[in-house]
Image (cartoon, rainbow, N blue to C red; front, side):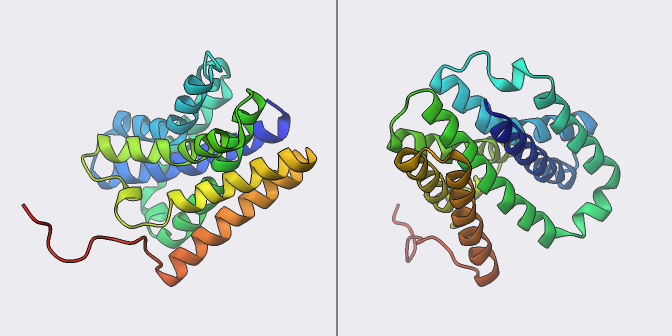
Length: 206
């Protein structure tokens, strides 16, 4: 994987791992539980992506940096969680940055392995949301992406922009930045303006 994508991948892993560790702390899990949720949140989406595209062993197992980063994020959150928890807004913003990085990295790596634009964009989205979904399932709650949050849609849009830009002029760096910007701006606006995905109206019939 090119140096740019590795760097973006590691930054995204750190941000997501902090978010996962914070969920573990709030669920009153022990240190091991915090580290597990940090690792799952940070690495889960990329692990799933690599398995699906045949990039085995996954980067999370082949490169020691991919294990060190979530462990470091988990330990820092475990020790400094009161300070981290008080910065909820900052965590949301950091999570939006992680989402935008992951959707682009996942999509461009899928392109490298020969996937077409649509499956590559879908894998970008899976890379961005897979770890968080797994984390939520492990702590026994409905994943955030199913609860009306505009989360998966911005990730898919950002991944699609990155893939199309790369396909049109082979400018991976510019395409990655454009895709990340689309996802980031959309997600931050959704947080600030409290935009929600459509939900069913009225009581559910039995």
